[in-house]
Amino acid sequence: MMNRREALSSVALLLGGTILGSQAFLSGCKSTAGDAVAFTPEDIAFLNEVAETILPKTDTPGAKEANVGEFMTVIVKDCYKPEEAKVFMEGLSKLKGTSFMKASAEERTKMLTELDAEAKAFQEKKKPEELPHYFRMMKELTLWGFFTSEVGATKVLRYVAVPGKFEGCTEYKKGDKAWAT
Image (cartoon, rainbow, N blue to C red):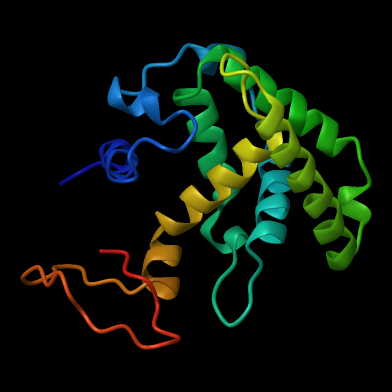
């Protein structure tokens, strides 16, 4: 049976290594950031709220239901390089210093939309050696954590535990879920 680390490594390979920190999976996810990074239960709860604002519960589960905050902490500690973890932690502190937790759902969405625009502008102007914006890290980890979770794969995506033969051409009908397997 494949463990979670092996599964995430496979997902990173399938995605072409496009997710930040995915290079760590290719080398077995051996980071030294874990020694210098410490998350509190409050940090995990805060990250769940940020993730829930990015992927809110609708007629399908939201990111909080998948406990994406816990996923983020594992990846940052176990897989990010120390300098990437530092950017993430500084961003977490900066975001926690705002009125995010006291804001309404609409205000939270507005705050994160502005942060997303800031991250996109930063990404367009950054030098190749510079690390990404912290919000980009949070957003990528939210999406990755949610869609690789049991909740995301089985309740949002189409999932077949033991798929049959490969069918390269399948008919898509508007409104169909994307495939998880």
